[in-house]
Image (cartoon, rainbow, N blue to C red):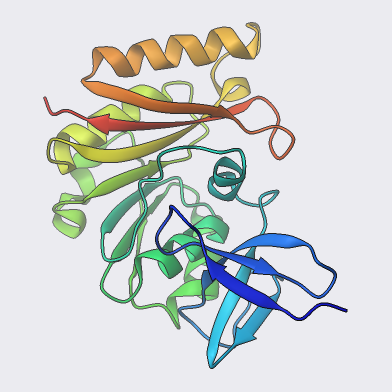
Length: 234
């Protein structure tokens, strides 16, 4: 049986590769809240550091990394505006990556999901700021966010691209990096997913975004793409 080993990702700071006893290789992040598993993920302890195995079937960000996205907008020390945080599975890994010197502003409309996020994460993670609000109205949480270095958007709304752009105009500076998970079935179930993706990407181009990479997320998520881009300003 092989020994457990953890190595930094060669290109993405704050993300790791964990090789387990059976030889399988998994993404992982350094646990900001040692001893606590968020959604049943395995904890791996190496030389007094603890890592959390990152499940791509539970996190579209992990899926995008495994599918080879060339741009990831999350890195240590930055302030991330997270739109559509749900109950916090991916948020927990973003929290690990940005670390104690970073911040994750979590906007979620559903009160039940926000309650779960607060219960599961906020006790041991001081870099998470929960915001129960609607991402369609970004001006409403300006007193909490004030400014961000990046946006990660994963919302089930038909106007996902517009919502992302409106938040970027209010909170980002030029040349900031962003990521958008586009869910074709949340936008138009009558069109083929490829047509929906093309339409949303055109919308982003009209709102001062430079597209850097687009990756399909199958087999981890059906009819989803992850778009990585740079915001060029108003």
